[in-house]
Length: 178
Image 1 (cartoon, rainbow, N blue to C red):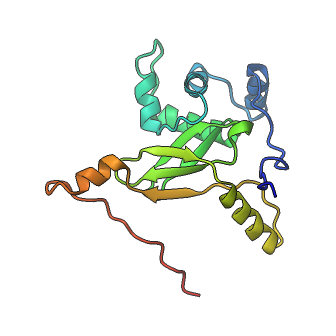
Image 2: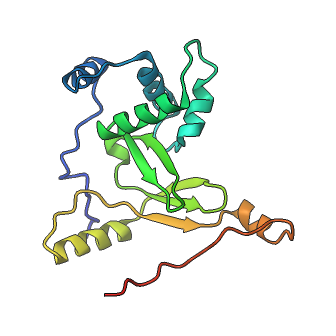
């Protein structure tokens, strides 16, 4: 039996053209500024599967001809995410990473190192099946299924044995009191 695909019936729109993007922003009372365009172009150049924090985006764009502030990067990332052009990965530690949205890359999951933030992607039919079963069991229709796994990468594991390095706090999810 094939794994359910949340993207098959999610109705997610394809990535819009520049003209469609300008029109969509105009409809929201906003413009496609040079800074917003630079943020989007950075993700397009990197391609799907690249996960950047706002600070990393800012660092990569700082050397350009036009100056861009960190606050502008944050606002641009939020706007482009709300338009469905970028996907936001919320980390349990309070950080956020962003990646280019794409239909072919929709139902994937993240392995996130709690020590350094390294993020790896993986796909799993079992996770999609579990999400589909949970949604159906409660009368929901699955739109998207994303799992974020918190772990320690090999580099952080090797540093954990170093007496001068404090290991990151690892806590198991506690069951909710009902």
